[in-house]
Every structure is written in C-alpha cells, then in structure tokens.
View 1: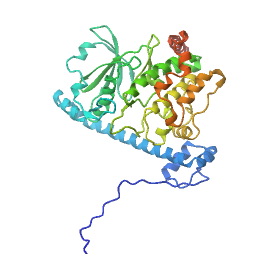
View 2: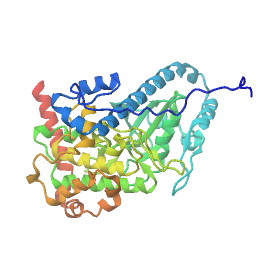
View 3: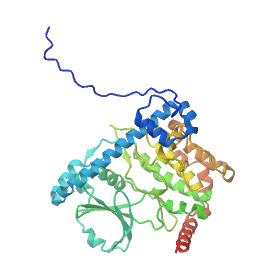
View 4: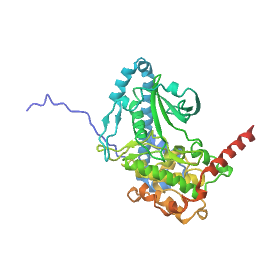
Length: 419
C-alpha cells in the first residue's frame, strides 16, 4: 500500500491547558512567563496564599486578561485599518456608501429570539432631511472614544437635543448599526429617546434627547464634598433603571455596561439608561454570549471567568452601581483591574463600609443583585417588586433634583476655590 499522496494538516482547535502548583514567587508554579509577570505586577506578597488556594480562579482571570488584551490589540489594528481606509471611504458617493453599508450592516429580526438579517442603510438613516439646516447651531459638550457630543436646537420645534458625531468607516458600520438598531427600536420612558440618524460628510450623526443634568457620575463625583444620595434617591434610580432593563431584557437584549456613567439625569430629576454601544441582541444562533465586554469593576463573575452569560450580567452591574451610589465608588476601585477581577471571583463583593447606616431592605436588595450564582440572581422584573423599591422609590424625598442641585453647587464651589 502506498502513502505518497497523504497530506497531514497542521493542528487546529487547540486548547492549551495550564497546569499549576504552588510557587514561593507568585503563589503559582507553571505559569507562562507573561502570566507570571502579570501576577507579580498586580499582586503583593500577602496575596500568595489566596492565589494558591484559588488556582483555577487565577488561571481563569489570566485567560480573561489575555483574551481582553487580544481584543484590544484587534481593536487597535481595526483602528489603524480605519485610518488607512478613510481616504477610500471619502471617495465614495452617497449611493456607493449606501450599498457598502447595506452589505455590511446586520440587525435583529422579530421577537422572541430573532434570526439576524441584513438591512439597508436607508432603514437606519434619514436621507430626506438636511441635518445641517435642521440643527444650524451646535455647541460641543463632550467627547469620548466613539466620537463627539454636541448640544443643538431643532430649528423647527425649538427642542434641545444631543447630537453624537462618529466617523463612518467600512470597519465600524456593523457595530454602529447594532447600536442604532437597538436604540431605534427601544421606546421606553426610562431609555434615552432616539430621534434620528444622518450621514454628514462621511460622519454618522445620531440625534437623541438631551438630559440637562448630565450623567449620574457627576453627582457621585461630589461624594467627598458631602453630597450623598439617600435610600429614597437610590431606590428611585434603581426603579428607573430596572424598568428600562426589564424592557430591554424582554426584547432579548443585554446592555452590558450598566454603571453611573451610562445613567443620564434630567433637570427635573428623571433618570434614563443611555449608551448602547456595548449592547448585544440575543438571537436563535446566539442565545448566550461569551464576549468580554464592559468595564472591569462592574463585571459579573460569570463574564470574568469566560462562561456563557445572559441578561443577568446587567443585574450584577446594577448591584455594583448601587454600592457606587452608596459609597461614591464601586468596590475594589483602589486596586489594579486584574487584582480587582480576581477578588470579585474569589472573595465576592465586600460588605458595605457602614452597614448600620442602611436599612434591612437596602442590604437585601444589594445582596440579591450581587448573587454570584447567575441562576439564582433575580431578574429585573422580579426586583421591581423588591421591598426596597416598594418602600422607598416613590417617596416625595426620592426626587433627585435636590442632589443634582447640591452636586452642581459643590462643583462650582470647588472651581471658585481653585481660581
């Protein structure tokens, strides 16, 4: 029998299992050099025993960090590719750009669990109105990684709106389409109202309602200045957020970045969920997710450990946000992210610094949100009926106008003091 024509392929679908044991240097022995360097740079001498006692968790965290760094590397490469392709994109006329977007964008189908389908650009973008005429006067009020935010006034109605301007490239069309599609189809009093999208000079303009008091973080930033939220204030924010999340989750979506930065406040004290840039639509093909998305200190244990996850990660993040409102910062904020992730998965979240200040209902609400077992963690709908919400959220003193005003005054006083 002849074997001259046999071809042996290279290995595929390889998983490298790391076997570790105790080491006096890091607490673990058998780590790849780059992992050992991470442990040494993020953990101290007093952490060795905890690391050795939680070897599997440590390996999970290091794998998480490697995967996260790989995602960041890919994002940087994509950004470089965006810059390289910007000139080519700029040469496309509107019809060509629409054809390109239609080929690359995807949007979810109907409930209960949709099948992803391609959509055309004109399903997401208004091509019949000139936004530069509709919003002639703009003032920049913010800037982030995704783009710039401007305050504008609708020349027809006089309504003030927020306009988010983002570069439109071949690489980010699909990501932006997901965000727009979710925003456009999310109509709820506790979710930022999406108004319209336009393309202007190869930039995507997303027009949203303007919230005059900024984000919740601006209140929490004045915690050390003595601006503290009471239980009614916190309950009101939780109720508003839970109502928005219950709606989002019913549509088989995950926000994946619930934190104070993404809760916007109105000058009247209203409270709404914003920023769907990390949101995901669950589908028949993907009824769970495993992508590393979010902000480390607010991440749920199942996400950190690389397990499949669902809408329950938003409930965990809400629990962290509750502690953020109670104490000014999320737990472990003083630790490097890698060490914080290890502590979250092995020790859980520490108790409140001053538990005697808080009601039994408040402490139970936090405990239920921060249940490590996602299966036992309640849903947004269930938490809306929790005694903490029922007892405090609708009290007259739950109105946020007081803390919004106090935070503004504290910020202005600090600015005047430094002059």
